[in-house]
Amino acid sequence: MTTIAIHQPGYIPWLSFFKKIINSDIFVFLDDVQYAKNYFHNRNKIRTNDGASWVTVPVEYQFGQLFNKIKINNKKNWSKKHQKTISMSYSKSKYFDPIWKQFEPIYENDFDQLIDLNMNIINQLMDIMSIKKKTIFSSELNIKETGSSRIIEICKALNADAYISGTGNKEKGHYINSEDFSKNNIDLIFQEYDHPTYNQCYEPFIPNLSILDLLFNTGNEAKNILTSMKTKII
Image (cartoon, rainbow, N blue to C red):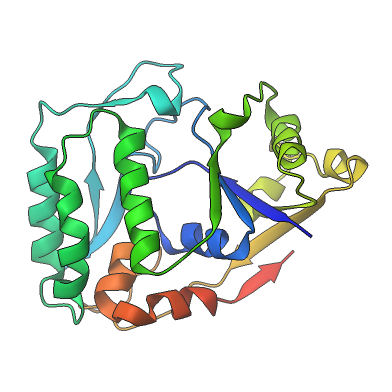
């Protein structure tokens, strides 16, 4: 059985994003769909002394643009600001120094497009955690269908017979149509993740932050924690 998962490549993604990569045989970065404003494409949350705080990459956006065409607004000094915010927030965490040494150089690059920034970050995080999976961009497959049909055609193009979907896609009225998958002999797997708890640098524990929070606080154990995350199939 070949299992795939599909997701837009967000900015310093959260834990379940990487858990989905671990659980798949092939992971598809959905880069040729319409960009969603105020989503996780260009922002995420980190832990500060005052709680969870957003770090946001400013972009130049027009309605209807595809994700892989979105440009970063580099007129704003967002990169130095993110470096400072992350460093100040996590400098006292147990594994900050070795992880930051590997991650910080990304901010020294002048990325023009958001997709390039996000993919450099994701690839670096996968390297840090030694996550080795086959990945592909959806734009490489040149599939024009939308909704369930798009996902199914991606599965067919990659000879996949199982697709991992988030539980939010199971809600009535969402674009996922389970009957379409059944007709095409593709197992539709709805996975729900139980968020792990670990020692953060501040209390109380706050879930659903960027993967950086896990890495800075657990170091080399991060991948093991992700791998052992309980997954419910519903």
